[in-house]
Length: 127
Picture (cartoon, rainbow, N blue to C red):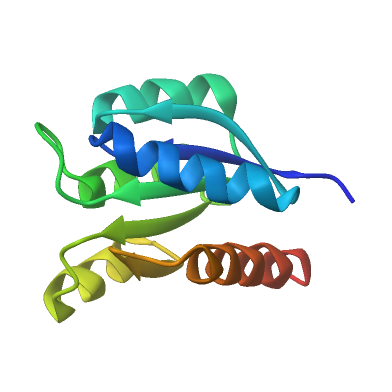
């Protein structure tokens, strides 16, 4: 089975490393890149074209919700999963309205990350 390609977006190095370790350890996902800001994420997305993006919400400059809108404007087929310590209903609703497929609240377990991403990938495969 081909690996699903992922771009990790979070301003915290620790969180990027944690997500990368979870995904690469599964053998199911290939991390193509890591971005520390929304602007960096947009540039990397255009260049790398991953199938999935994990997106933090609160970052300096542009937030993850606006970055999600811009990424989906470039490629409506990409799956964006929000990862945030801010689990308020309003942010979850705004994220989904912007086009995110799911929302993972920090701190998260490896099982939660893998379950969400696997379900999204398997669901989109069935079209």
